[in-house]
Amino acid sequence: MSNEGQTPDLTGDRGFRTVRESTYRYALAGCAVLSVLTTVSIIAVLVLDAADFFSVVPIAEFLTATEFSASEPTTFGVLPLALGTMLITIGAAVIALPVGLLTAIYLSEYATERTRSVLKPMLEVLAGVPTVVYGYFAIVYITPALNVVIGWLNGALGLGFPNLGLFNGLSASLVVGIMIIPMVSSISEDAMSSVPDSLRQAGYGLGATKFNVSLRIVVPAAISGIASSFILAISRAIGETMAVVLAAGSQPPDIPAVQSAFGIPYVAPGDLIGLYTESSATMTVAMINIASGDISGGSTAYKSLFAIGLTLFVITLAMNVVSDVVASRYREEYE
Amino acid sequence: MTTEDMATETEAQHDEAEEESLISTDPGKGGLDENAERGGVTSGKTVIRSRDLDVFYGETQALQHIDLEIPENQVTAMIGPSGCGKSTFLRCINRMNDLIDIARVEGELTFKGKNVYDDDVDPVALRRRIGMVFQHPNPFPKSIYDNVAYGLRTQDKTENMDEVIEESLKKAALWDEVKDRLDESALDLSGGQQQRLCIARAIAVDPEVVLMDEPASALDPIATSQIEDLIEELSEEYTVVIVTHNMQQAARISDKTAVFLTGGELVEFDDTDKIFENPESQRVEDYITGKFG
Image 1 (cartoon, rainbow over the protein chains, first blue to last red):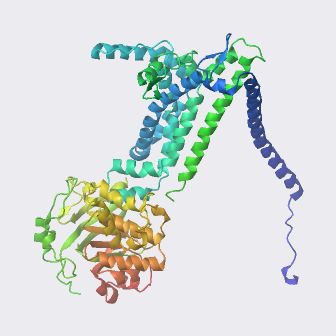
Image 2 (image 1 turned 120 degrees about the vertical axis):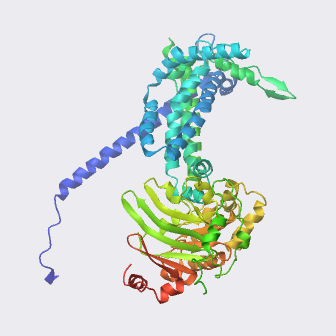
């Protein structure tokens, strides 16, 4: 003690700093709590109002009735809306998943640094286009263009494809698909870029070609990120509203006739594909229609909004859970 | 060791005769392999020869005028301090440097008489005959079985695949440890096991040369000694070129040693015994006795 001399003054402006630090702390925590509170309240409102709705319309009826009409005489079957959502989502996925994945492979494995630095931002601009623009684009350009193609195919090959209606599921699927390509390609590309180079080297060292290394080494190693990108993109397609309401119209698709062969019920594939030529309102589109129609606040039609909303919420939540499970199951596999 | 005559007189004729097509995508085994004296240090045939080889990374010269002749069915070690270019040389042999955009190779590097940098050489075909094992074990995130099967499938050698895989794992001294869990992930193996798996994977496709880039540097001493034993056995069947910064390792397992020193210069290349007991160059002696590096 004696030979250490005078102790240094290390107190600084401690009092003031403590106050300042705790102010930051509470302000930041407040922001975090705000979003949690919002989420919880939304879920609470959804569940409470949906419960109100289900006290009038039984859940079984909601889930099995084959028609949806919010105006008198009302029927509240979610099936046609779910079918509409399914049609658009599957159509979009068929376009976006392969194109997005192949784009990601190109960007991650083939493109030079320079090409990638140009292409990636351009793709991300696609994601920034307002969805209403996509819808407008579909109805004004894509549907007429598709009709020209169908007319040409019918003429040249003697086929009998029906023409598309003004509102149709096909052009809606196309634009939603294009809309979600950047999501697939961007997240998948990130996943593939983080596959260690040593795995690629191992492949090349064994005399593999670039394509083989990309497809058999990089893609499997990045599969968790790729699967997440697929699921996120599909969730986005399920929830998409503006583009769909413009392109696919507000009439839910007709539930196709269920046929039966050897006691097994099925729907003819032609009937399902035929649905793409007609209006194909989805769950979100139906909600817009109800909300923008002249219905009174406490009516069953109004409450059905929340029942559909809750259904949608459950579906997207399930998708997110699946995505998390997939991601964690394969995470760090190559580390 | 009776290697005085190697690498001097006989290769010229051999080289011409042995020049084989590296252009085909599915090269067969060399036609003259049967004539080779397998398994002994007396076999004096040169498999890989570099003449006046320069390598540049951008503006930096990584290797300067390398002249080297690597004999068949022996272990040739490349030693030297970090950054001396020994790994660069190794990666020239199977053209892995092609994967680095800024790398540029000048001069000649022949594999059985064929310059691997000729325009008509397909690096994929070349790498199918010259296998490689890397510094850090890099098994694919697949099952043990699929790791070894990958190269076979890639090269369309799927005939009797189960037997080939078993044989390769046996040669890599790994079979007994993994035979009951071939379908488990290769990543569950220890580092040493992973590296032996990588060796099994490399030899499964039956290459003629196995390049090893510090294969034991990431391993503990026991795993290292297993790998070393394995390398000595492999040299009965394969030409092994190994880069190491561990001089004792080079002295233990190699027949020939090349000493690279800073600046990408090959200072001395001779029988391992000679290099370690009586090197010609003072710099090599200083390096080997630990005065620098």
